[in-house]
Length: 366
Image (cartoon, rainbow, N blue to C red; front, top):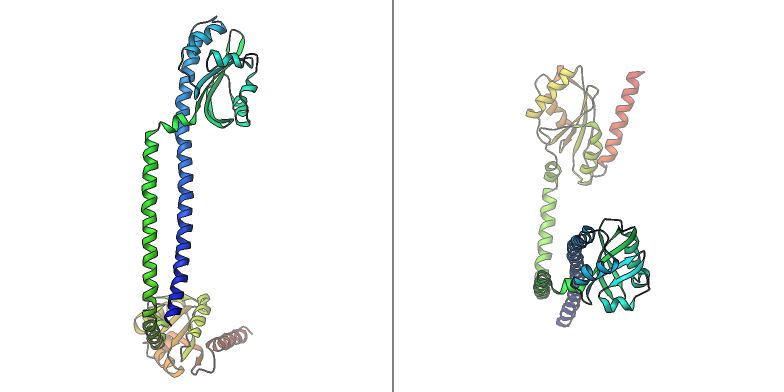
């Protein structure tokens, strides 16, 4: 017996451990996706600032007319800060005029911009540039990723393209806020792991207590079955507050089905007819006060009312109706039918009741 309990405990522990591993893996994946999204947001913010910087340099070029290509390169671009991870490029009619510095420019002398901007994302970036409208894009060149900002402009009858490229590591490595966020994410993940481990321990302890509660559960279930049998009839009426409600005749099928499932006995079905709407209204008003909650009322819409008497035999149902003041002048009892034993189902009695009403209606029309 103890061996079986130990085996069951080990199986449950393995299941819980496997579940925790999956949850931690999912959380790690979600955290990684959020971190990537956060990186892209930082790069996008930096790119907008970089666009403004490119626009400022373009304005400096356009301040004075008739600058030569050499003056643009040496006096403007050559004077700007540059490194292997952040630099400028300038092309004239797709021919490279400046890349990073003088040394790097000599290496690419005579080549076109398509040669330098290798890679699909870099090529698409060049193709997307517009005249006098600075735009940016994150591009991949070799093993490095850059935030690239650029613009096409016309100067002295020639078509130039100026770009500023910044390696993404420059932005992300120097971002103190992102470093703090990474530290906070690690701390939160650590707390999650501790909580998950605590849950695993608690689950193991719960499995140990489960065996002790098994006998009490069986005893409680037996008591519940006894209580359910004793309250079955009460529950049938608790679902519907019948004293203040009048239901449409279309809902009668649902009530019959529910009462049939609960096997309530006896049940009597009664159809009443009225001479006028006023008499029908008067009966329903009096029924709210004088009839108890074991009687469910349905409006038949044709100067008729159908009643379900729960735990009423046929004689008792008729007597209850005749005890209403003015009952003889108020309504006529057209049809009654009762289910008074367990052998006949309520659904079968209801079918016979409907059939009798149809036959009576056909004879009346004939």
